[in-house]
Length: 269
Image 1 (cartoon, rainbow, N blue to C red):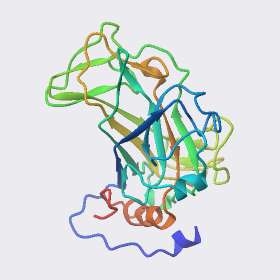
Image 2: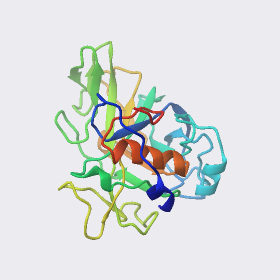
Image 3: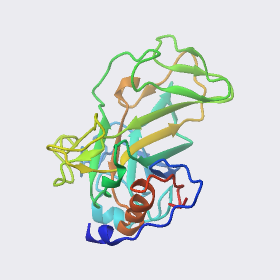
Image 4: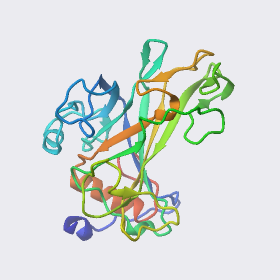
């Protein structure tokens, strides 16, 4: 934090979109039935996950192993974090995402209060145990991005069917307020909370970047629909294990989020 506080923010050029945001653009890395947050040290104990970012991620991953193992499937290269989601299946065939863009932003009234994640910080969004129908209009649903958009639904109504030039897409949003003490918690959620009034206060006074995974799949779908390794569409969830280089993350938070200026994957305007 002392290093972050001492950073001088870069000058924001005229004409820059004033949105507090930067991103890491990641390609698919590998799949394993592992989960180093929920089931650490237990290879094969989880449902299948699709991993992005650090290419070494497995059940035995720790903060130190992520920080010392390269490369990453993300741009920039100094983001060695691990990101993962349950694998998507079309019938019995795994459909791996073309890309995951991890957006780091802010929904706060005053984004200048935001601070970077400490190395080793971990959290989960979504719930693998949620198994409820997700018809059109449901919160957290999948949608079709691209020309033509959605042209129908699967036979059970839970999955969109996309036009030939469109593709299945999902956005998963993480909490953005932290207790300021714990890098993790027993349920991997209780140390963080979501702001509903644009402020972080009470038991969660520290504003952290608002992460969201935007995942794009190379498929238009069919009436048969899809399934996740964790079950129904409602069971979508994502894991974040922070292993950013401190200076790389700190400068992006300082330059892009606290100054409310839209940056690219390189952290520049």
